[in-house]
Length: 162
Ligand SMILES: Nc1nc2c(c(=O)[nH]1)N[C@H]1C(S)=C(S)[C@@H](COP(=O)(O)O)O[C@H]1N2
Ligand SMILES: [Mo]
Image (tube, rainbow, N blue to C red; front, side):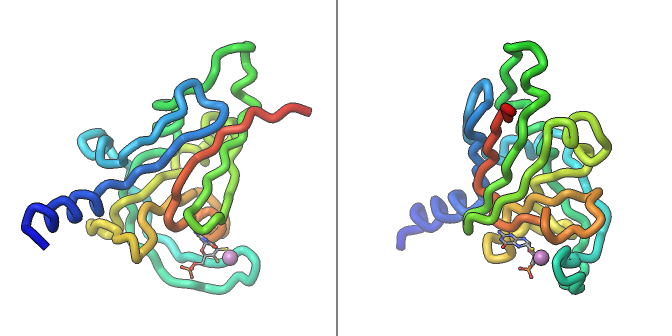
């Protein structure tokens, strides 16, 4: 392999792209690298524990990343009809098809939203794809494992109707 090809592969590996699909104003793909020069959010260390079994999985160091809210604001929500965006549910979908949900109120109108991050660093080191990058993590959850989503691929917005 030429040096130029090797370099291209490294650059490709460093790009973490997440697509925002569904009921957004501007469905788009975002490269988390674009956020590196903006203020980032750092979570506290925590113990990963499964909701279903209460099993302790492992201790996790501080994550650094961007707020899910900020990614959503980049894609925007439709202003019309007025207030309809408050019925939006966001599905965070991993590469393996694992899905978790967040409501608009939870993210934008409760303290939970201040602690939902898409992380690309752990303990000051870049998270590798083998380690599950990018990782979506909801830092205010009682049991963190279910909404600790490895290999996040997309955020799908759906405005619910009764
Ligand atoms: N992408 C993805 N992330 C996931 C899951 C999954 O199946 N796929 N399972 C969740 C659940 S229920 C648990 S308990 C933990 C398991 O973490 P581990 O795979 O690192 O042991 O991952 C969480 N994140
Ligand atoms: Mo779990």
